[in-house]
Image: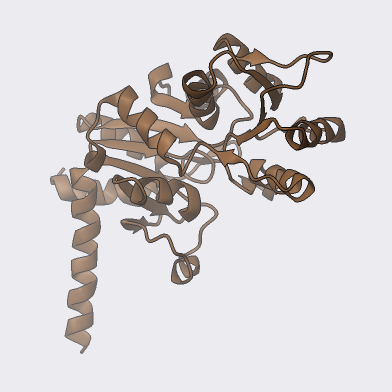
Length: 284
């Protein structure tokens, strides 16, 4: 029995190694995966450097729509990880693309930060201004400048027929001190008040996977979405024909796997462990 357990454990380890070997594009979450607060998680930077050294590719994707891609680029550069614009994508980017493809020339009331508002305006999205008629669409993001006035206005527009969209469904955003309410929590309050559920974008939805594939040209089965959340990061891959890899460096703990309906293709302690296993797989 003991030998059987050891054999099963060895097979599982080999599966984790071989899985990493086949991946051509790692789409990394940021909060809780690459960094936590202002600190890079141990081994994360080394993972990125090693992946690129092997000719594989890295993209960062965050559901956090409170900041612009440029802000994230500057933040990563300050952490010793400079990237190009085509290597960063946010749920805000996915939302903008969805609006341009599905609701072209429609007006939007945005519940979001100044950074997100600027991104929408640069993309040509028609934002609602005070005094305008009811907007066609209400979009809720991770608004760290949220006020009661914004919440009330969003509810009023939705009750009167505006389409309800949300950049992502994350309930909490990880911080060094714990968690803070995120977009999904705001939307829950709006839904409770209006009776209307939003259409969520970002991870784990199809629009995100489609946008990554279009931008990179990578084959679906060679893409891995990597992150610390089962219901967003991991689900993005496993629900849409790519791969979903869980790291235990953020929100999700090992015991959470027992009750989760989302089953990762692979579970790793951190990006640092992934680097070690990838090195083993490649014999380098």
